[in-house]
Length: 438
Ligand SMILES: Nc1nc2c(ncn2[C@@H]2O[C@H](COP(=O)(O)OP(=O)(O)OP(=O)(O)O)[C@@H](O)[C@H]2O)c(=O)[nH]1
Ligand SMILES: [Mg+2]
Image 1 (tube, rainbow, N blue to C red):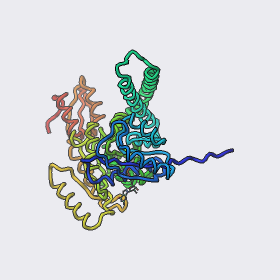
Image 2 (cartoon, rainbow, N blue to C red):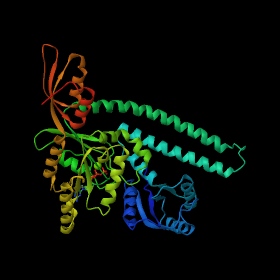
Image 3 (cartoon, protein in one colour):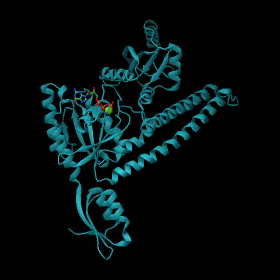
Image 4 (tube, protein in one colour):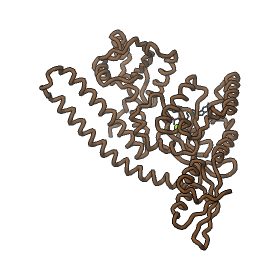
């Protein structure tokens, strides 16, 4: 049998820095190199490219293009990553000029997600996102062709027909995937409902990719999910039981990491996965405080949360977990400790706890905070449900934690239920009569 040697792409990574952009371009280049590395390619050259203006046709200026051309030839590169959003035309033109594969940031992230997706739902979501991306490329290519043809609109050349039919094929594929996804999601929805009916509260780990969510998840739940110095190590949501200090169980879920400029198509495609985040009782926002870009990345995460209707802007409880404290020097650590204490004292700021998932420092304090936060909003109520409103009983079982229940001869059901603030509000507005005082 002939064994084929896997061809490892030899990759050039470019990070274009626009004139008005920050001085942290080298860190952003570093992230792009990390993303490329997550694709198992060999990064043989990387550089920040100062860009005075975007050139419509080729994105980069002529001088830079020939400079990179030489590097590609000398180092026998086989692909170039441009860490920016290229138009389809720019991408194609650069490919022609350099005679290698060119991908932009969205393409890169899509490739990584494609490699990593392990569950059926994950694979379908990525495939859908990729089709949406390709389809938009076709549409834009089409606009471009139309412009090129200028006034000769009567010439409906083969290009048009080709693109039209390509679009149709893509649309059909997308419809099929959406149907399959629907099927998978129904199952997931049922599982989620089952979890919701269970009295356990759900805590979700969210955060920038590589912040240490999976490492913390493993430490808290004694499990062995993949935690690795690799961007987007986790793509599929995992749940495990988390034992709180008071001995009560909660459910902890590990989720996909976020990244700056996460393509909107991907956010949409991962909506179902992110719904888990949306419906959690508490979010733990894991941050890598040893990362010089930690503030910027914190904001990126908050933006994505906001886009999916989750997080503090939407009234969801959240705690910041400042991870990787072991990597700070004494001075850095002291300043973060002061900030965390100040944040906890300030009503308007999100509570922050400093930990190291590696050494375990700070974890017990964090867990006490989680426990307190989970029960802070609970109320214990007494209700009396007349037989005609019996569906409320099912609702209470689904949403609350039923502590006691008994049915009188009259058919009235008495219940003692622990309920979140939000659910109590719903109950009050829909069934104002069944709440008993006290
Ligand atoms: N020094 C140090 N390293 C840590 C700590 N927590 C996590 N790491 C390392 O950071 C890297 C990323 O950790 P993961 O747990 O995979 O990060 P993640 O947030 O799950 O990342 P994605 O799943 O890719 O989004 C790994 O190499 C971990 O060993 C910590 O407290 N201290
Ligand atoms: Mg992970």
